[in-house]
Amino acid sequence: MLNAEQLSDIVVNAMEDRKASDIQILDVRGISDITDWLVIASGGSNRQVSAIARKIADDAKEQGHRPLGMEGEDSGEWALVDLGDVVAHVMQPAIRDFYQLEKLWSPVQDTVAAQA
Image 1 (cartoon, rainbow, N blue to C red):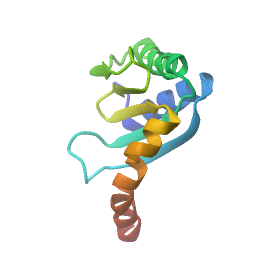
Image 2 (tube, rainbow, N blue to C red):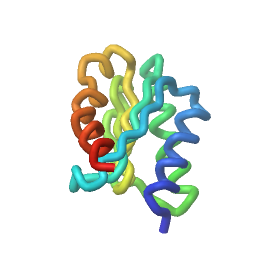
Image 3 (cartoon, rainbow, N blue to C red):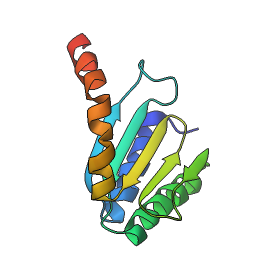
Image 4 (cartoon, rainbow, N blue to C red):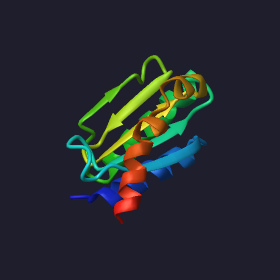
């Protein structure tokens, strides 16, 4: 069984392999009951967003970790790959700017940093 750090490495490596941009890793342990890590990246087109999401899922499967779910892969504007302890979001820049997940979680990140 892969731990959260190993899963996040798989996600980041898959994103880098498919040329994702602006990769951000957010630690949400102790704050979210849903996951420990969010990994967010941008893809420049529908095709690239879908390819990044598929690569993440395929690489996780190759390491013996089946994704719990995938959403948005068909539309390619925003794809989510749920690996349990790690959730990957891949978005086109306009969608990412609109939803601003990093900002949504930034007060959480500031709180975690202050507690460390």
